[in-house]
Length: 126
Image 1 (cartoon, rainbow, N blue to C red):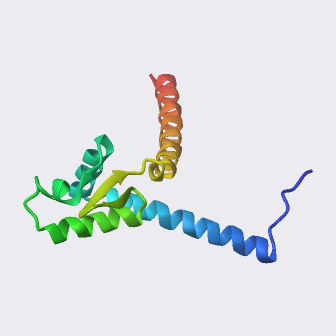
Image 2: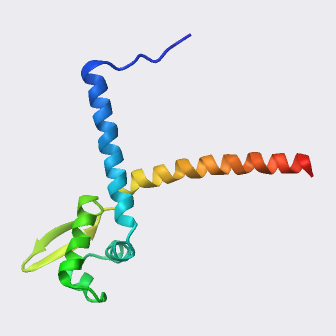
Image 3: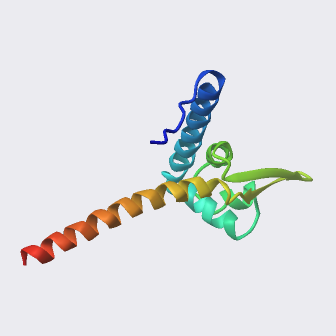
């Protein structure tokens, strides 16, 4: 019987650290998406890059509050900011959503499998 070798020493620490960082990134992405305003900002900058002022315009909150939302999105690597003269331009980084989408796909697969088994069970009962 073939066994997968256990990681030891530096390899185990490296793997564990990678897992911790991966989970922290996922937490950051999902935490960012938990807020309605941040989801709306993300939706808007996904269509086109916007200045911070343009992002703030439709909201009934202070520019400082919008900036705080942008910091959360930046830490989650969902947006980037760059200077263009006096303006800060915000752009969308879709790559950050890849791991989150994979995680959600795993849950979808699990639930579809469970629902398929339930359907088969109910068909046998009926």
